[in-house]
Image (tube, rainbow, N blue to C red; front, side, top):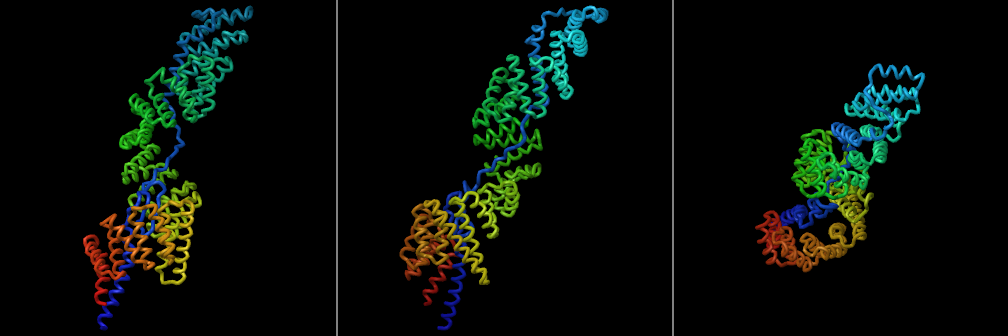
Amino acid sequence: MNFQKHILKSLATFFIIWTFIIGGFLSTAQDLPPNEDLSLGASVFVFRSSGRTAQKKFVSSNRTKRTKIQRLVAVKNIRKQYNNLAVVTARRKRVKIFKPEPVQIEVAKKSAKKSAKEASLTLTGAAQFYYDNNEMDKSIDLYREAIDLDEKNTDAILGLSDALASKASDLLEKDKPQEARGLFDEAVKLNVKNSVAYSGLGEIYDSLDDNDKAIFNYEKALSLNADLTELYAPLGILYTQKNEIAKAEDFLNKAIALNRNDASIQYFLGVVRLKQNRYEDARLALTESTKLDATMPEAHYSLGEALAKLDREAEAVNEYKEAIRLKPTYVDAWFGLGAAEYERENYVEAIKAYTETNRLKNDIGAAHANLADAYRQLKEYDKANGEYSIAAVFIKDDAELYSNWGFCLGKVQKWNNAILRLNEAVALSADHIDYTNLGWAYYNASQIDLKSKLPETKAEGKAKLQQAKAALQKAVSIKNDFAPAYINLGITQNDLGEYQAAVESLKRANELRKDSVFAINELGIAYRKLNEYDNAIKQFERAVALNDKYAIGLYNLGEAQFRRRNVKEAKKAHEKLKKLDTNLAKALEILIIGAKMK
């Protein structure tokens, strides 16, 4: 008899140990939506969007500009168009143009004392000859002398303005904008209607990133000469950079109608289409740009962005990689590559791309946050926590960041820190998801404290259970049809000994998720704690009927049947359980053996 008691005592002890272990098996019951996680035990964490989390966007402060070559070509084209319009010739009709001989010029200068106006006109004609023959230095010198003789000589004044603008344009084509600027300024002072001088100043201010002054001068030139259609493109580009999309589109459409074979125009039109969310049109324009000029890294990057928006990530990856090949330090392209690889669930490649992004520029909060998400997907939680902590230095207003960070902290059992981060998420959004997750953290933190042998730590665990309940009650008050909150609340109430309240919470969870094996099983556990074995068995039978491979449900069913003193039914559950989980089957077998020995 004493031997039998000893065996029963040993079995009872073994059963208690297995009961504790079985709690861990609840984590296998993951009949949950993809945005929920149950891997830390019998409580649910809810991700805001999906378990993968949408990648955060990076708004680059870099503005794509025309290349130096594109600028110089534009200057040349504007000048050529201006000359073809024959504006200068049409303006000066009074002056007789002649090929000057040195003797004639000297005679004109000597006769200036007798007739200054006549001599001034003679010098003006000679200056015009040099202008027409593109000898601008000689032309400028003679125009100045002509003006010295007659400061009211309009032809000389206008001619000098044109000559100065022409020489300045030469300097611009030779990439000497600082030397050109003074000449353009003087040209405008002499003739406020000198459109070529205004367009030149526009180019100079454009190169200096002074968009407002550049636009003013370009538009002034166009208002003076509407036929200077070469100005459409730079104006469209500048308005794109200023994010004035309507004006940008107007000028770029005009420019593309005149020249469809300009890679830079096609590129900026594609950028405008991206900003308008016209992704297919953007793709077409940017594809054309890369065909016309395959050496523009910005065009390949923007094409990648358009393809990503069209859910064509594989093609987007190729474009990002080409942009990087052309410009290895292209931060935007590295970031885009990381986002595209993440969307393709190529998390290792995403990590490589984001790591390089951070190496090149380490103050992009979104890159650190996205890198953390990629580490989280690979269950590298310590690395994820490190990146979330860096991201939080730059990002202060993103509840999802703090929520995901709290989850990863929980994964490495840093529950108090997880609670801090999830409280920050609550402070930012305070919605039902945030309160559900805060309750999740308090509940799991309590489980650690309650295992302690220290009375004060156990007391802290009980306090955290109360805090979990308060957070979860807040969640269901905000959204009374949110199943995860009711599940977590019911579990918490069970641990607090509030079994009837747990039943009500879990019944509501079952109403919301009629086919949730996990929620049904939890309701069965609540009934079991009330010793309502019939109701408990009904729930466990429902659970295993929905999923006949649900081992913990079979264990609970067998255990409830045993408590109900229906050993035959308990054995049936045991036979099925042996095929699914030998450890759980062994635990159930111990109960049955114990019953026999009694």
